[in-house]
Image (cartoon, rainbow, N blue to C red):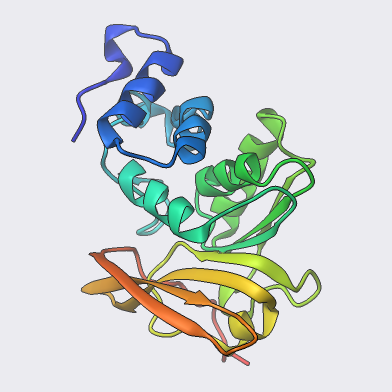
Length: 223
């Protein structure tokens, strides 16, 4: 865990820079994005002084958390984000990763975050607007397992919750040359998996073990 608490009164920009330096080596574009986004705005106010520590933090709704910065960085690096891409995030939670992704796909790119917990979706949407990202980021309260067929196809799909499988809707909504990154496994542990689509067929790579909060399904059957 990095020790750059904001309690000492340092500006958030210094805390973010120190966080990024502690995570090195990082892709230069990912590092710049993480240094430019105020992570403390995405956590409950009482946890703001811990926002730049390399640890997940609770969001105060169910078991939802904001992922540790090192895992966020890994997700972003594995997604290989570039300007103009259309991105779907499943399990948007606080909205932090969605805003970082939007930073990495500008100019011309857009991010849609799906969050099943209405309180989280509304809170994330408010922060997105307050930080000036409303033209590039939308947070929608929805069952992430079904994706967003009205906005497909997506160049990149990032799943920010543990999933037992890569759901059929995500495969359908991924662009022909798209990339999907998801923590696949059960609630006790997952592996970060990357599915890369190509004319020769899907290629799957498994990365490091990880531990995400399990995907939440709303009441009623999944179709």
